[in-house]
Image (cartoon, helix red, strand yellow):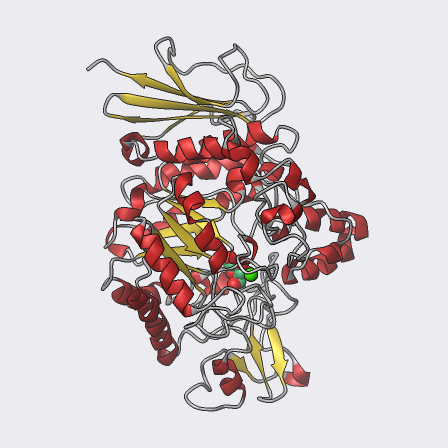
Length: 547
Ligand code: GLC
Ligand code: CA
């Protein structure tokens, strides 16, 4: 079993918006190739790619139409191989996204399944209509209305936990699991180093697909989240990946540290890591677009709980952003104190124990988009959830919540320069999604040579993560009740790192948990040291015991 990921950091690329290499307004592999120096200089050890496969883009790549090829928008398999070689030549790793809870409805398997062509007839979850055409059960889809869609051709309903164009695979069918094994082997034989497994904790549905009578926010969720055969199926896939030097990280909504250990802990280990969501709900109810004011305790509670819960038993994933959430500065920090809060947030999570992920543009302090109309935000879930919210919140508030909470905020093109199109694509070409108009103030070129830039702060932190105290150090939190400060330390072999983060624009005083008389200041986002903490100040102290 691989262990190498434990002191690594990964850069997460959402390829459509990273860098356009051939001038058609869409990010691609050629663009990634151009930016490998940049990625490596950031100090990360590998790349996780959101899906690169052919897809009709109902959910931008998370609706896969062919598991064994590269989307022509992004390039070719040959280009992918060349990129993989180059990544390896630089001593870095590459993770693919494995999306097997569902496929695109345009996948040949689904097209054959609709026509009851063997062996595909039972590849998906088909059910006849109930009395008077009723749905097979009362489950909701997470993205688009009810979880069932009628198919004329087959004369049955199919289950889709996400968009209508994302039918769920029937993982209880051994032939489907064989397909998954073969997809894993296909990419492992090409040399990839691991997989991020999309909503993998949803692949096993409760027998009989019972109605959900509890009626929580999303009906059905408890009948497919961490379902009955999840562990067995993951174990089967693990037998394949164990034949290679491979790491696996599963996306796991509604995961807790205790539940996690049944999958990533000790002898139960069928995945190496989980991307859990608990710390991503500090300013919302369950999902990003149900807004509420930011609460620091809802952020540090989960972060600390996971640090303690997995200690010596599992391993954490550390992240604050990805392609599914708004930009973190706009959520947990402050656009007004953009650089200060960006640095504070970076130190806050990167000094914890775990394998770290940095999402494209996060290292530049990119922020949310502020566009006039809801129609300006291209996303199936934003569109649908807007309609749902509008019914009980009214147009204005619904629009505000969606704009603040939509993942489109994280999907605007990366801002490389202050030139037209932010250097994402050539001048005169229209980027597939609007560039955030703040690119003249926020772009990589400006930050490259500024020693105080957020980009350079990320670089120093990512380098520092190689210190043993980050990988092995203990974790103790101080003043957990405090509503403005997150304070913790890490200690290992006579060295102690104290991290003090302020989450407010007020000045706040902080009581030293122990004397800092002999401490050195390792990182900070303001010059010097004053008594009170300044807006969004972070201070990282190092103490060394005489030995
Ligand atoms: C995961 C992906 C998200 C996608 C969904 C359905 O949550 O990260 O982008 O829309 O699964 O595949
Ligand atoms: Ca392109």
